[in-house]
Length: 205
Ligand SMILES: C[S@@+](CC[C@H](N)C(=O)[O-])C[C@H]1O[C@@H](n2cnc3c(N)ncnc32)[C@H](O)[C@@H]1O
Image (cartoon, rainbow, N blue to C red; front, side):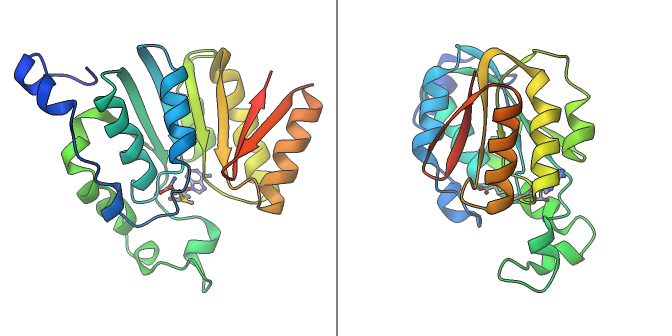
C-alpha cells in the first residue's frame, strides 16, 4: 500500500475500490491508457514523478489507479503552480487563478484532499526539482509542463539522468510543434527511438 499509516486490512480493502475523483477536476487529461500501461510496467515498489500537475486531474487518476492495483508507490508532484505561458496570458487556456498568489496551488490542494497522503509535492521549477533526485533513482517520469521547444528540451535533459536505466521517460502533447521537435531532437542526439500514441511520447532506449 502506498503512503503511510494504512496498516489495517479493512482500510486496504476499502482502498482497492477507491472511486476516481479526476472527472470532477479541470484539466487536459486524455492519456488514461498510457497511465494504465505505466502502472502495469512499474515494479511493485516504485518512484513516479509527474512534472506539470496543474489542478491534479491526471495525477489523481494515476494515484487512485495505483491504489486500486495495490501498488506501493512514492509519487511526486512537480509544479511551480504558476501556470504555463498559455495559462497566464489572454489565450484559449487563460485561467484567472494564475493571477492570484497560490491560486492554482490552493485549488490543486483542495482537489486532491482524498489522496493527500499518497503524494509528495515539490513546488518548484522542473529543473530545480530534478536536482533534488539522485541520478538513476526514478522508475518513471511523465513531463506535461511547458510546451515550447527550449523548456521541453531542458525538461527532458534534466529528468533523463534521474530515471533508472530501462525506466520510463515520457510526456504529453507530442502534437505541439515545440514538444515534437524537442522530443525528436533529444532522441536523435542520444540515439533513442520514440513511441507515441494518445498524444503521448515515450523515449525508447
Ligand atoms: C498542461 S498543465 C498540466 C496538466 C496536468 N498534467 C493534467 O493533465 O491535468 C502544465 C503545468 O505545468 C506547470 N509548469 C509549466 N512550466 C513549468 C516549469 N518549468 N516548472 C514547473 N512547472 C511548470 C504549470 O504551472 C502547469 O500547472
